Image: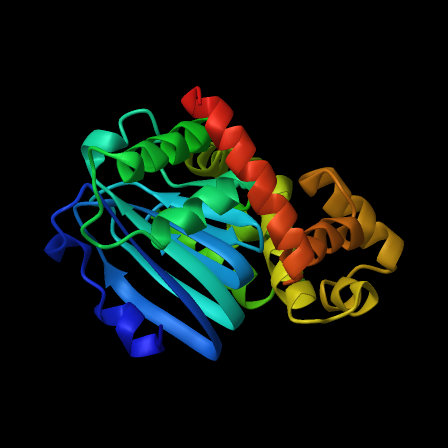
Length: 287
């Protein structure tokens, strides 16, 4: 599928509770302006990097992760690089057990293969037959998938937006919360409480999230850990690695290696994943 085909895809025109589309291309920037649709949306990134902005924040979808966007939620999407992306549009009635807010999911081999298989069904698939059972199995697996943490709260409060805009433009910004309080004409205590109320994080953790999102995007583009650490103002790569591991649960090299190795298009691995997935799917269906 080409760029224009993807942008012209209209799920509302397909009389089925689930419609899907896949895309492979290299782009310096594929963007969809703010929009909304009745269907919930699931975006799986097998290769490439996707960011999605909604009113409450910015979500990042690196390789081997999926982004869930509830129905009727305005959002914009940006994709960069060598892409392999699969998008599913799901009727709200089928999504009652899935989150009411944007969320990211980690996708294992079974869930990934099920998502891709759904995108390859005929547009007018048999909803009451094997195709429908495949979709239900996919939804069951999605409900059990572990949640990710690549979310950057972007509050609507204009004072916090001032800070967020500055940190987005320069993640190495080291302005303290006391200095920001003076800039936005608040007391430090009031600003601390406002940040906690709107982001669920303290100021330091919120600023680290800007740095992690920036780091993942730069590392995905091929920048070295040392380069990224210096870009973020860290005195050493080890200090940056410590911060990244604290936030993401693993050092950046390991984080990226797991996704890169999973994304290598080796036919043997794909066959092995498919066989394993089908066996697990058969067990899930009681076959």
